[in-house]
Image 1 (cartoon, rainbow, N blue to C red):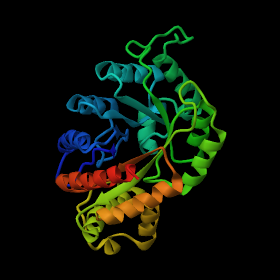
Image 2: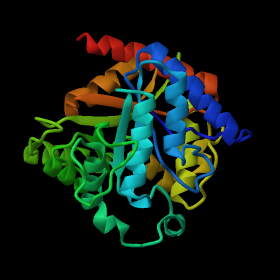
Image 3: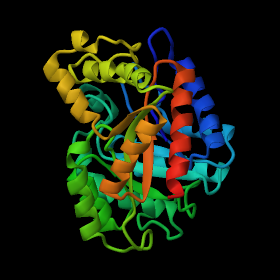
Length: 326
């Protein structure tokens, strides 16, 4: 599961973070394998900006599920600082921590400038990835600096992407790759081909290993699921029209709220998803798995009502468990 700690209208950040803890506990009970949180900034509807802090709380409230970043936007940070943070997490929670790395700011350009004192950080992303990995390895970094905590923890590192760049980099370094198809499906097929066809075996992975992410909104009836999903559609429409907001309450009349051109863009953005009752999402998830053949499927989805969001992931967990046995 991927969780952005959504902040709903008529609630606050504290509510959102407490909901994340409750959802993570429930995810473990449902049998989910990973629970990832993502770094975003200056977005009123997302409370997971301090990603490593939230990961620590989630890991402390759960027992077995792997907890990680999906992801940390590395150009916002020093590789040494991230190595120390995730080395600390791994020391507290051995063999349960994942570190997914992205090169986007996770924000608008104004916020990116507030986060990054140098504007050319993206150019150093490949070397920063290698520097970070070296801090987490058993081999001392050749710059004479040791990450303490961090050194020797070997926290698994993933490259995240929504374009061909991440696919090429992950293949070149021989690292596992996670594609953000839940909001950027257009290049998914091509990115997977690039990654799989150019992969270089490494000490981190002997063969390509891909995870893709799909949006899921499940309910007892498909009409209800479509209604609940409208919250995310409205909020994303607000985001792409320059008006980021808290997670909106569901609305049956989104065609009257959102201009047709914007609504079409949102629907295309969310095309890698499953929405409906259990039978419907099973067919849709099967279609995604058959078409893209991922090694792992991650799911995500924001629902205005926390209890209904838990129910959605609970329904999805039963569908996914059944699909694993096929």
